[in-house]
Length: 95
Image 1 (cartoon, rainbow, N blue to C red):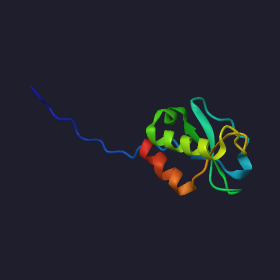
Image 2 (cartoon, one colour; image 1 turned 60 degrees about the vertical axis):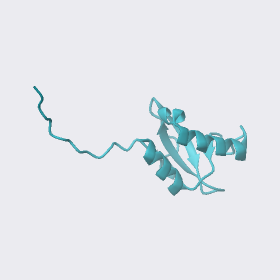
Image 3 (cartoon, helix red, strand yellow; image 1 turned 90 degrees about the horizontal axis):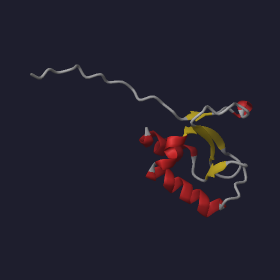
Image 4 (cartoon, rainbow, N blue to C red; image 1 turned 180 degrees about the vertical axis):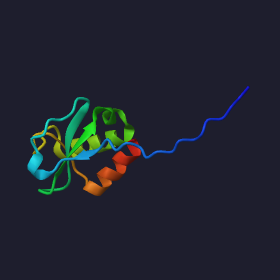
C-alpha cells in the first residue's frame, strides 16, 4: 500500500554570511571559516561552512587563490581572487 506525502517547498537556508566592515572581529561559528573575496583593496569578508572545502567548485576557487597568492595571503587569511558577485553565485550552487 502506498500513500503520498504533500510536497513541502521551502527556500534553502543561506549558510553564506557576509560580515560588515565594522564588525570584522566577530567570532566565527563552529564549523565555518572566514574567507576574503575580491580584487585589490575592495575585499569583503565572508563566513562559509567548512563543508564547502570538499566541493569541486570551491576547489576551483582555492586553486585560483593558490595560483595568485601561493600560501602568502595578504589579508592574513584565505583570500579568493574573484569578484563578490561571482563568489556568491558559486557558493549559492553549493547549498
